[in-house]
Length: 245
Image 1 (tube, rainbow, N blue to C red):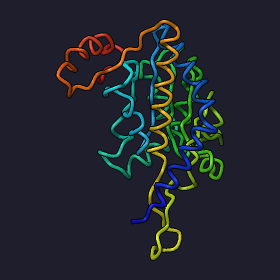
Image 2: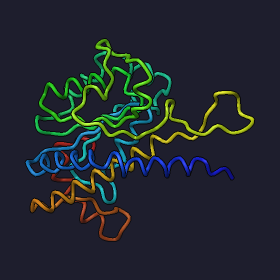
Image 3: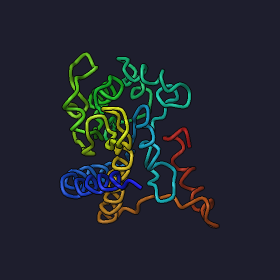
Image 4: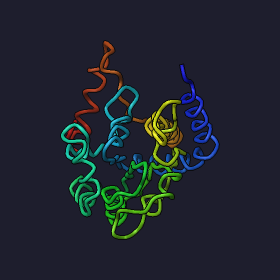
């Protein structure tokens, strides 16, 4: 079995530990300060990036203060090809943010491997106008080698307060197998590395909350005997700010 993918993922995890960890530390401090003041952490991404929005939400070990912005037409289950068109349309991202319930002092994570489409870029611009801290989760290798599809000519990493770089290659897929067509690649890395960076950030956020004397509200697995009882109070507390709860 070809193990090249594992080797490349390990190298990217080393990149996160060496190069991205200082930024994660800064971001987690901002997140902890927001939560301590009653704030929320919002996540927005289109296409496959919506998986990273769901990663920390309503799950075993997940912070209660997570609000994913999940819009069906921007995901894959209604029409995968149409979602690619919608994510490029100017104005869509700003509308999502304007109608999200996000408030000044909250934190918005924007996930886009390429960072070039109007959806996330408009969302970043609108959020900053509203006094929201923005965090890009992206590939700088990819984004710096493509042009923006936004009227401003800017890419996501150029518009956010913080950037978490997953280190992935241009095009995301990283393995070419003998016998494949020239230029054909498989095995994308963005999902596994993005999810790792998000979980590192949430862990560091909880660590900082505890240092501040604030007990993090964290979900227990619903598949443990006491999970439903423990989670019921959290759901009741947060469902006004997170309608999809």
